[in-house]
Amino acid sequence: MKMKMRVMNQEPFNAETPNQYLRSWITANRVFFARNQGQIPEKPIPLSDWSLTIEGEVNKPLVLDFDQICRMPKAIVSNTLECSGNSRSLFEKKASGNPWTIGGVGNAVWGGVWLRELLESAGPKANAHHVAFEGLDKPLGSAKIQFIRSIPIEKAMSSSLLAYEMNGEPLPLKHGYPLRALALGWTGANCVKWLHKIIVLDRPFEGFYMDKVYRKFQQGQDPKTGEVVTGINLKSIITQPDKSEILEAGRVTVLGAAYAGESSVERVEISVDDGKAWNPATFIGPNEPYAWRQWQFLWSVKEKGEYTLLSRATDVEGNQQPINANWNVLGYGNNGIREHAVTIQIS
Ligand SMILES: Nc1nc2c(c(=O)[nH]1)N[C@H]1C(S)=C(S)[C@@H](COP(=O)(O)O)O[C@H]1N2
Ligand SMILES: [Mo]
Figure 1 (cartoon, protein in one colour):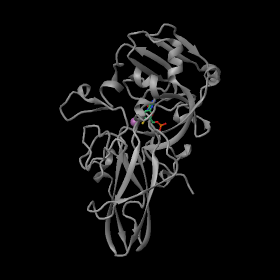
Figure 2 (tube, protein in one colour; figure 1 turned 135 degrees about the horizontal axis):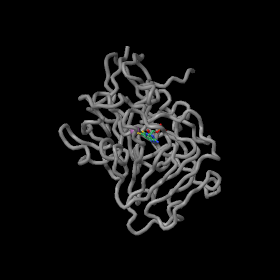
Figure 3 (cartoon, helix red, strand yellow; figure 1 turned 30 degrees about the vertical axis):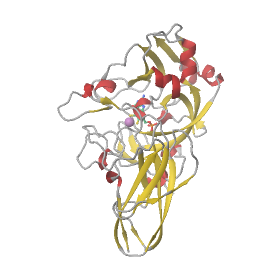
Figure 4 (cartoon, helix red, strand yellow; figure 1 turned 90 degrees about the vertical axis):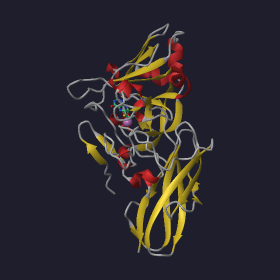
């Protein structure tokens, strides 16, 4: 079978994973979605030319080479990564940005080191509040703005990984070789690729990628006053059947995934009558922190006609996916039940 991504942009390269590859718990590296603000490095940097610097509000600034990082205790964690703008094109009202459908998400098992261990050896000072990450990718456009993002030190110390492996392979070039940050359960923008510098700060980093984007704001509002996009929202997606598919009456297997960022999914329900009745779906596959859960619903359908399928996730705290997501100018965080409806035909 041909591996075909849905490419939205060649430069910068932005491509989403087709539904059929979202049906397994692990998303294969070769079809894992790609989101870039700058240029993917043309070739992998020789490891002898690469180092990781930790500086700023620390007692002991560090420069580490790749071997030193690999000799540290290895952590292996699963994590579902989702682009902040995933499902943007499914909002009824248009939002600006890449027209993602549901494929700006994927799940991988990552190998690396806990960021906490590195920060502890550098010794954050008492005024350390944010941790900024800088990537090596060359910026595009006339402004030439480097991709730099910062996260609160609590997140950096509790549940952030620096990954050099993805699904058992060295981190692929397009996913950040040789090292990337992963703020577990947080959207992709918080997970800087081609990482080479960590700067500990006394406040959030200020710059284009912190203040103008990755914030939820309304028309006419100053983006900087908008809420910063951090954790991945509770959400479920239907990955089979596809929209507009024509199927025969009888038994239909409905497949999907559900995820909840830093929380965990407790339950998924399916409606085949546009939201009137809800039926429980069954989980299949692994149940790991920060990772999505695959589910299925075996549907027995006798009558021909048009059907609208909806899925609804509930997390362990009892929160339920919203019927409709909150629209914002840049279309972040679309997790609406309605927006993810799949209408099909039974013939
Ligand atoms: N250095 C760098 N890191 C980056 C980006 C980037 O443009 N440059 N894009 C971010 C965004 S918006 C997302 S969604 C994820 C996508 O990761 P992936 O391409 O490995 O799926 O990378 C993040 N890290
Ligand atoms: Mo993103």
